[in-house]
Length: 418
View (cartoon, rainbow, N blue to C red):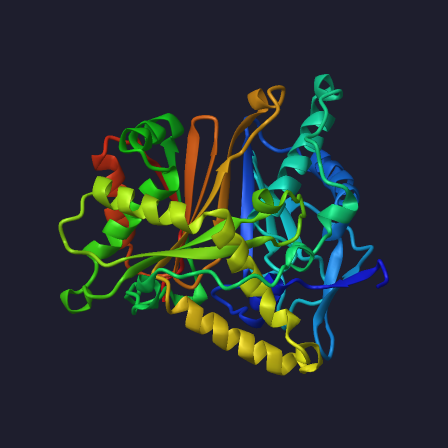
């Protein structure tokens, strides 16, 4: 295969088949510095970062049987932030352009990517490289601070789904995952908008709570959101499960550092009795999560996702038919989910860079509700994308965390009315 082009991976095919105006399949990762951004230096750093990450210097094209990426000489440009978070990067009106965007506002640097070229972890590596290069250009005393150890260019561009596929047996599913799921109700925001909520908490405070309960942070926050959703659940629907989708970073399971998509999602479902507390629900959720994250289950689930691609004759099916089938599959899968939580974990920094950086934030576009969690030092940030007019469920969530004694600072974007 020529080095100037390569096929999209299987996750990218799902994103390409299901783009819409409200969910353009874009994620954002941001870094807030302790001083305002200098645009000229940021563009110098971006030029350097683009050279170091050629797998992102591509445009997307449509063939008869598949989409493919092609290398391009287009140069990225960091621009002032004027668009809403996670604005569209690829679609009928946007073609032959780079599939990522870099913007800045005050002290914040944003990197937004079309999900077909990478996932949040790959995007975060790009952002951290950009910030490292920028801080070195701005602060000569950092010139000798080495960047983080990185994968080779070959490994960064690797389709890990294809490389690690082993045709293992399908993973066993929790029987509750087959039950009908509760969906968040309410009128959507007009003009295909989403609202973005950024909640800052103390990492130490939250970890003290999770350690006291003996659960992970993911389980604690997911339980709090499930209880908030249950408060909004009509009485006639309380026999349905509340199902949380959790993207799982597969890199640690296979020992790869690919910068392309390499994740799959698990679902944790719960039928409420009505007497659950945050602690009992978090412990129940945590037990299910630990079971779902066992190596053999995660790897079997990954193989199951890749298996369709390996079916005889599938490569000769025209792209428009594949897209229709994939979009139908994605729609059916989405109906099984109440809300999504993605925990990117702690964002490590070299100690020399820490005095210059305030923290990180992440968002992902969604047609319903999607919360992305990340932390840097004592700054734990919950970035929630919300598509509904009513925010009662989110208010329930934040109130519950506050009632737990957690300090919360909340920011939200404005939305246009009708």
